[in-house]
Image (cartoon, rainbow, N blue to C red; front, side, top):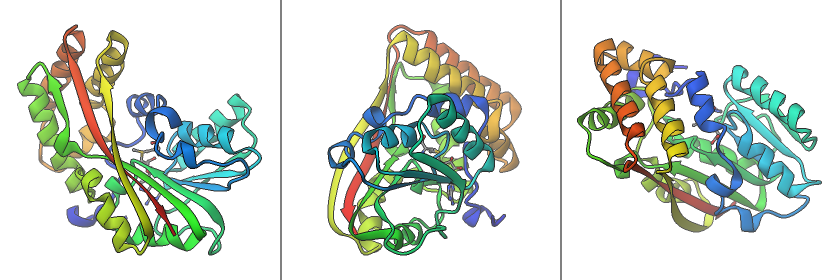
Amino acid sequence: MASESSTRDAYTHGHHASVLRIHAWRTVENSAAYLAPHLQAGADILDVGSGPGTITLDLARRVRPGRVRGIDVSAEVVAQAEGLAESEGVRNVSFAVGDAYALDAPDDSYDVVHAHQVLQHLARPVDALREFRRVLKPGGLLAVRDVDYGGVIWSPSSAGLSRWLELYHEVHEWNGGDPHAGRHLKRWVREAGYGEVAASGTTWVFASALEREWWGGSWAERATESKFAAHAIESGHSNPAELRAISQAWLDWAADDDAWFLMPHGEIIARA
Ligand SMILES: C[S@@+](CC[C@H](N)C(=O)[O-])C[C@H]1O[C@@H](n2cnc3c(N)ncnc32)[C@H](O)[C@@H]1O
């Protein structure tokens, strides 16, 4: 990975337990509903940047006897996904370390390529999308979904969370990614040469006591632990005292019964 800020392309979140706890909640229902109607039994799927693998396993359950392969640049998270597949007894799934820019697969080999919350972390998303198209069968389906941090809103207003959002943008960009990926997906996919592009958008909302405890609690931890905190300090954008204040702001938000939080996502279905 390059070390310059503009091309770092180093995954912003890292794989700290607080990050994995957030990702473990993800399913096809809450994160890939736009793809669900297109899934057919027997389809072979490549899940790029599969992370802890919860969505990957869910995809595998839906396309049996089709095979699903999850690849991720992090060996640590690949091992975790393999453990999850083993413990959940999902047999038509496999995981491997791999790079979105250089997939270890022949041309025309998959019915579906899926990438959830991945393009936002890449310095060259269009190059990655071209590589996804290479491994898709002619007429195969691309499904990509990314958040857009430019549209994140919450209540009650909080100076701590406002600073968190500003810092999140700074750290994400320092890592070579684009925190506004959601709004750019359509353009990137068309630039990569796909036909039949269908664009939609959905949100995640965190409001119930359980959701607030989980989302706010996870961010309270991430603000001071995890790679996000390390990168915030290393990049010179923050310091331990400010990160502790942001962490407390998340705890305060989570403890407020009236609190509410929304994250918008762009999503694209396209044909190779
Ligand atoms: C936000 S996580 C999303 C994980 C999973 N798709 C989900 O939604 O639960 C992004 C993942 O992309 C992986 N990643 C980042 N850059 C990558 C690259 N160049 N090739 C493959 N995976 C990459 C990270 O290691 C991380 O696991």
